Amino acid sequence: MTATRMAKVGAQESTAIRELRESLFGELVLPGDEHYDEARQIHNPSIDRRPEMIVRAADSIDVIRAIEFARSAGMQVAIRSGGHCLSGHSMIDDGMNIDLSRMKQVNIDQENRTAWVQPGATTADLVAAIEPYGLALTTGDTATVGIGGLTLGGGIGWMVRKYGLTIDSLLSVEMVTADGRLVTASKRENPDLFWALRGGGGNFGIVTGFEFQLQQVGQVFGGVLILPATREVLSGYASYAPNAPDELTTITMVMHLPPLPFVPEDHHGTLAFIIFVCYVGDPDAGQVAMTPLRKLAEPIAELIAPMPYSALYNFTEIGAVPHDSTIRSGYLRELSGDVIDMLLDHARQNPMPMGLIQIRALGGALKAVPNESTAFPHRDKKLLLALINIGTGEAVERWVIDLWERVGPSTEGAYVNFLDDEGEARIRDAYSPEHFARLAAIKRQYDPENVFRNNQNILPAE
Ligand SMILES: Cc1cc2nc3c(=O)[nH]c(=O)nc-3n(C[C@H](O)[C@H](O)[C@H](O)COP(=O)(O)OP(=O)(O)OC[C@H]3O[C@@H](n4cnc5c(N)ncnc54)[C@H](O)[C@@H]3O)c2cc1C
Image (cartoon, rainbow, N blue to C red; front, side, top):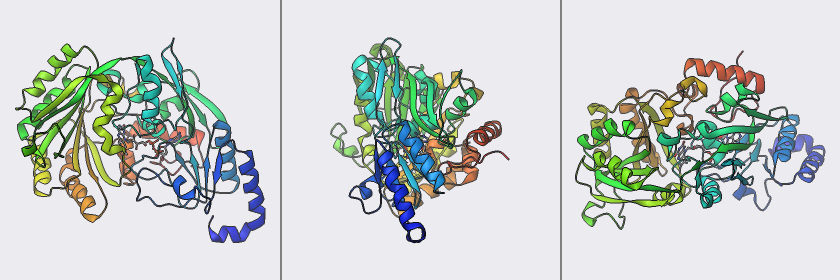
């Protein structure tokens, strides 16, 4: 608690705090408590914020108690599920952090192939619960990312071309409003809110449960194909991958090759084009779908085989280790020769060991859903480009910013889950003007005082 506040309201506030602590099923963590430093740590270790209090909620009732307390005490709130947001918004200085990371339950309805998932479940928690039934949900590329933030921003995952965004599998949501009400949103109940929660981020309330439709997937045909990073390879990939069979989703990186055991030694440290593959379907058909990619150049290495969906996360383990990073991103309608030259030139001329140029092919089932049916407005885009540098320091940041200055003007829009703390104009880029206006109107209805402002914030419409 800030010294000034403490001095002002001292004993009176202590009673209120004690009452809050006693009313919770979960835990109240205050500065000086044994778990305080651990509880204020999010995935990015350089975010060093000190909330006045952390409510580690155990259920929706705890969340209601927390928000009522915060509002009566005039405290700002920040909401944390998996703690992976790239902007650091899920931790706060001075206010209350409402931490949902212990709300991890996953309840499966096998007959209807649905799951009720609490927001603090990580992707790994969810996959571990549903995979034994042969069921899957399209989730992001890293096991530790929280279902809460991933879903509210859209969720561009390993099966995006087959099953769309994570929100395209969302059936209903349970949410605590700014005034402490527990509401349900679905296509039938509060449909406007349901629309907004599918892409509008954490602007409308605190989501305490998601109901998802799952898919019977079994094993996937997945792994990694490594090609030389050339203009022809990148151009060929960008032409083929967004139009490939919907079963094939790929996530690629232009980066310097780490010394992986299946990569020939003479390629260690060289610039390469790494294609992570998830084919949902018969492996023979998967081989056929991969043929045009294999033909782009003599592969440097390949490791693709039938595997459980969860095994894909072995390829992205590095992302699961807490790290600082800088990111800039935008969509591309095509990958022009000029943009490819800028990307390759920058990666070669200013090498950074963990400087990654990520390109994701979109299309498929993502595109099949009308743009206006959810708050995610970029379904017509073919590619998502992200420049990511893992690590700390000015040089790390510079590598991303310099390249972004060159290629950013060729991109369109923004993916809200890939935004850093980049300001209001970039938040608007994440939506079309029509989407943004509708989101602002729904924000006015559910959070007119902008209680939920520590996020990629949309102000309530005037
Ligand atoms: C290593 C890494 C890999 C990633 N890979 C992918 C990927 O493949 N695909 C993809 O789409 N994204 C990806 N992301 C981005 C990720 O989806 C977002 O950072 C997302 O916000 C993380 O969710 P979280 O719950 O872990 O984060 P948190 O930091 O807990 O939450 C992020 C924000 O979401 C809001 N929020 C979270 N939970 C709730 C809730 N229950 N109620 C209301 N608001 C809430 C809050 O505003 C919060 O500030 C990745 C991020 C990282 C760091």
